[in-house]
Image 1 (cartoon, helix red, strand yellow):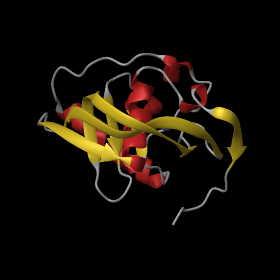
Image 2 (cartoon, rainbow, N blue to C red):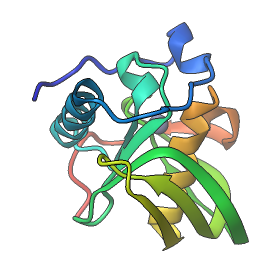
Image 3 (cartoon, protein in one colour):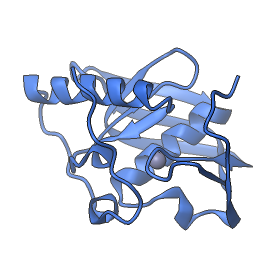
Length: 157
Ligand code: ZN
């Protein structure tokens, strides 16, 4: 387990499309472990592999103490929309308003390549959409309504 360097907005790698993961390997499981370490260290709620320089379709999310490892994730269904503040570990100190689906149903495989489907609302739904966007080379600043604003770098309790 190790902390990896988080790529910042402006790094070309964040604009590339990621490749499907055909099978799980010990090396990828190590990457996933490192992604959790890196996300928790940075006090984030989600991290996509391209943010640590790896162009593979892997994201980790933990918005409320329940971690979701999502390999080859795909949105199956969305319902309603919600506009709320959003930030990204690749754009530190900033946030902006983004409209996302309020409810999503998504499929993915976990770190053991076990298939699952997750039904998500609110913040978790937002995080899933945000992280899957990263796999397509999309950063939330592309979707922001109005200007980015500065945020205090502190825990949101
Ligand atoms: Zn992000």
